[in-house]
Image 1: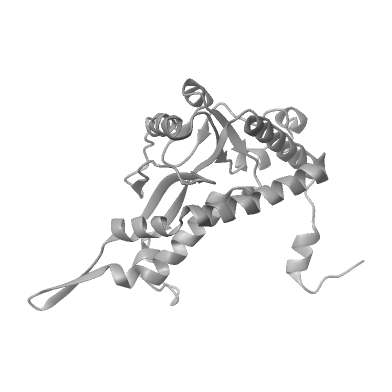
Image 2: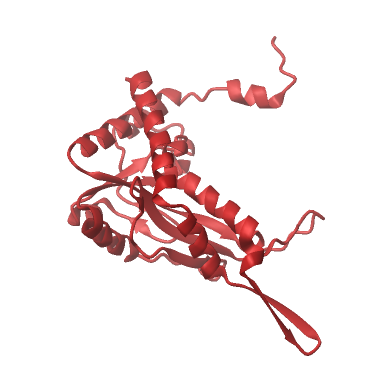
Length: 251
């Protein structure tokens, strides 16, 4: 019986029994996306990311002591033309703030229509529901690439809402998140936050106490601004190469 000393290697070689279904989902998604692109739809990627307060303040929990801290949720979208000209949304997500903003997706669709016309709006699906129900008919699930509603933390994405503005909503299959350039944009934003947070700090002395403030909105806005259209084209071109690879491999 083969033995692997490196557990990482063992995890890479292991395969899921649902790999063929995942490939079918990916192929269907890519074919649908290409059809829409050939029909004149602009591709934009809509999604969110979480930025914990500790990332902003630089708190170190290396001593093993962990303190629950608030998390900021940022919602935005972009594509090969850069960020969509829509004011990104930022919410404080903690145990006291868990409601969704149902009107946001409609507002976004209206702005996207004015900026680009008809769009293929891609939203990442975390896929947790697929893995939690292994006894269900996976073949039937492979026939549908758009659920009735895609739930994000901050809003709900509904295909009917997208269609009302002339768009099409696509769900990016789970385990293929690197086909979403928005994830790379979020990573850049977080690195910018870590490396530049000190430049957005303001100190105030009140008697015997000194307070430090972080201009969070300015920090996030500057980080988003740094991801310019040129960077977006680089990210989307990389995704395009992966899409062509999978179209050739899975077809």
